[in-house]
Length: 273
Length: 300
Image 1 (tube, rainbow over the protein chains, first blue to last red):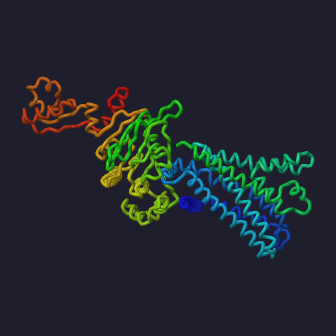
Image 2: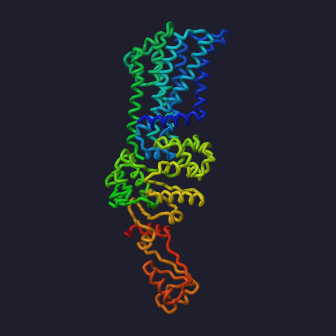
Image 3: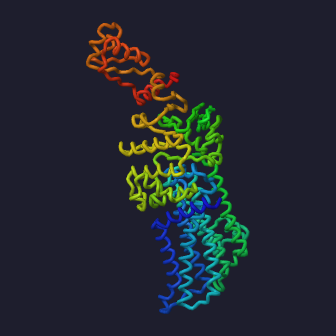
């Protein structure tokens, strides 16, 4: 059961690490993460980082834009690409189930993304510790939340990529639809929600706000980081608006992953070649 | 069912809504036999192959392979089958060796077999180069190599020689012949009729999802009754006395029906003492075009 999954996963890992843009996006994430962490030093002339809650909010803002985009770029041609090249039909002629093919691809893609995330945020945490002497007991829990929630967010969007990749007839259509989804979900929806959260003039029902957060995995991710690293002063209102405990936000993000996985599985099993 | 019938298809029908992709097809492929599946684009060949693979479920009918009924992908997983899809582009960023290792791992085949196959297919010098650097012929050889990695009992090949030069095509058919001799049942979908003619045991001609004709080339010649051309310098002189044949001869060439072939041969050799002549039989290509042109008549 697991051997074919791991075989497909290791092929995906090899294939994607040879894809230079994956390395390129990893470097962008690392660079942005380091710039945000240490850019304050330019003003003060000393090596310093913002307060941790502020830093986490900034890092999660980068993550919420870059990670879904990376996940989409990694997964958009997973099925339609292999269908176009004939290898999907070939894989189906092998002694494999469709679930094994899908899970193998998923494990491979998530491993690539997890490596990128751990490297980018891990390096940032290590450099902060080395250069500013910030205690590991403070840094580690927050960066662990950042890494785990980033991986869950990436899982969601990898699966969104699969859903689209299984539905379209051309690779170009898949990437066009996914970029539209990325703009709508990550940019527009997020922007509307953030505006509603901070706009005192708008009286938004608290319950509706919570529902809106749960309806978008990128907002669950943002809310999760706000709750994990609550800000003390000015923007305390933002984290206080999120009424879910941390565990519930993790569960919500995991449910999103589960639902997207079920949809992908169902579409793949019903796909007619 | 004959004991060596590896593939047995009975009354197979596949419909997509109102459209019939495959309509009531029955065929058999025996161990050590090569069957060519011929037909125009959209004739139903690919649908038939996909049903043999278990990827597409038939609307009705039955497929039996190696004595097991195949109605779903999981049924086919127990059968040692090799497949080469049409126009396949194997993972271009991986090396040839990595590609074969990947497919070998999926079939739980030892890696030593990969090295053996790479050498057999003349790819050992390029085994560590990425597939994107391979020529069309090398890519096709690599695809074919993955299909035979497991020494399959059944081999399904979809356009295995399309776009290949004559030497590369010859190499492919030599390999097909080797497998055939080892008892593999082979189904080849192709449009390259002239190339395939000398390398198959039987042909199955389809149009619009239906069988038009099937059998060995000789049988198909009889069925279609395409004319045979006798050529020889003495023919006109030899048949001058035969009123009927004389009307058919032009410039020492005699065009006659298949059924008359033995009689004419006998007449020329025994009655006229003419041995210096050649016979041009209709080829698979002529048979195919005849079937296509007369597709509304039941040639079979």
